[in-house]
Figure 1: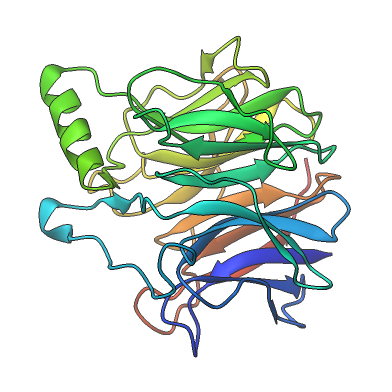
Figure 2 (figure 1 turned 135 degrees about the vertical axis):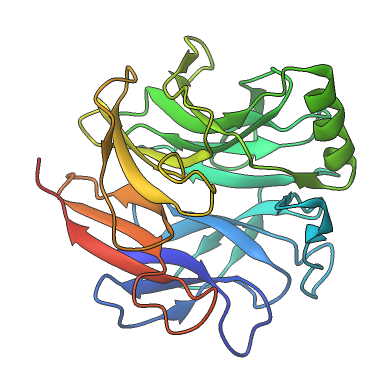
Length: 292
């Protein structure tokens, strides 16, 4: 089993995309080494992958966000989505849009890519064919819809969303968006059919719930949340039924655990966390057996 991930490590000044074996060996650079990259995902054949990168707009690392406004996420407008041949390194640009295109994931059959885009003025979900054609908008509610993943049967999409409700929240959201920023203070998990219909809210706890991923059984969703921490600084993994019932905390050992994903057969779980970190902001990749 091979993993694909983003990492900031010498000689690079910001995140680049790498692959490695599940035991941590054979770490290989996949991206160009320029700009900042994020959100990588294998095609089902394991020979290609997608990721988002800012390198076309600027080969240098983009500036970090100004945290004087509180904790915010950057939505770099130079992010575009690319596919890469892992054997030859051939890169193909899939989006060409004057705005944020990132957070992509490939469907289980390799025919579609779901992603987040600002192309129509708000952060909504879109789906396109694997070659970048036939783009269709899936969401249109005011707010940030992001981090989408297909279910393993390709029939559903799970994602995180922050919908401003009051006038003050709308003004804050729009003001930050003009600065290419979002504030992930309150995020909820949603599920919908792969065509954008049948939208259903899964979590309703007012916390920062993100990085959802479906178990291959199609009945459970794993995600990261700070709902257990009144300060909002600690994140753990949680499991919940797709209908919102049966919430269960999974990890306890670190102050940050997130980005969980199941293997195709559901027997293994990979996630990132600061367990055993030897320096501030250090994150590591973990693989665990999963037994139901």
